[in-house]
Image: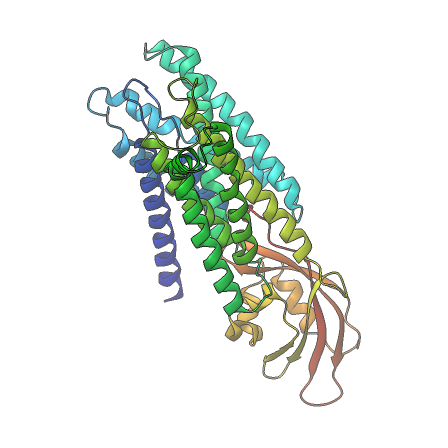
Amino acid sequence: MKTSSSFTQKIITIAIWTLIYYLSGVISLKFDEPASNISIVWFPAGVATAAFLCSRWRQWPVLLGCFVIINLVLDSSLKENYILSLAYAFLSMPSTMLIAWVVRRFSRRGDDLHTVLMWIFSTIIVSLLDALLASIGFVLFGKGTFEEIFWVGFVADVTGIFFATTVIMGFFNIQFRTHISPVKNKLSGSIIWLLLCLFTLLIFNNSLKEFSGAILHIHNDMLIFTFACLPIILAVMLSISWGNQGGSIALLTLATIVIYYTGQGYGPFFIKGLHHGEPLLLVQCYLTATALLMVFLRVLTRSTHHFDETSGVQHAVYQLNLSTGEIEWGHLSDELASIDPTIMSKMNKLIEQIHPDDKNKVLEHWSSSGKQQHLPQLDFRLSIQEGHWVTITDSESILFSHHEPRMIIGNWHITRSVPLFKAN
């Protein structure tokens, strides 16, 4: 029954990734230019990168197959040249897989800043190489000039990966939680979100521009351009109020309004003197810069959240009844508190959450023969959620073996927390 449930969960997860990939592709195609052979912005690249970052290695072939099929479904030129469409559907995937592999393979565990920088630099370098190879291929098939295809493809991939990956990982990273009261938190966040919607609408549907011209008699495009920073400030405030998920909601809200009105020809990025397509390029830079700001904000909040004011680490005290296997906890930290209490209260269930390579040494640690009262320090990995681990240090544990029931009282310290992107 457990195997069947796990298989169903994996199928649902892959189906969700496939649906998100398809919807992001539909949105990206809305900004296609008929004369161009590649998309101006390609959000599925970011979705695929996030999927490979979050999924286990053995799920990659399935995800690859699903994404390739979606690429073929989204390709309007499939009937005209199915060989070229099939080749492009496959060749558009290795870059996202390579980025995810580099981040998961070379980023230092527990060092969020290093992980983010690894993600940024690998995205730029891999996207550069991918755009170079793609543009050469299109030129050989007589599908356009090298300069046009290279830069459009490079910007489309980088923008899509930076923005979409940031939004998706914000929903997956639930470890950071704010500490103000839930009611106050929700109320302040709701007000900030409404202000974000209001000001973004006023700025990007030209209402503020018309107001400044008709009422204030100010006709300065650069002033309106400066006001575009206000939604970014509100998005940061929402991220602080609602955490990572609030940041992703802010990015989605901002992008929806900005992209919609830019597509209609409105907004502060339509400045006199710009050539065709340049306003959309400014929008891509605007959203990408906002997304990267959110990423570094998450690094900052996580780096300060990992340490409390007293001991510098998250910790918990436990009492294990060796006769019944029941565990009582005190002072559970945020990440440990996120685990199902029915799992945390039973030794056999908790063992299932421990990394397969560490299970035996934890069992040996808790199955002491009674010859030593003070148990040695032990490090092991514990699963917080699917594919995400923390390193636990069991220290200062004492075995009480001279009375019934025999029990162990010890301390757990979270010495290494869940990485921003990497899954094991």
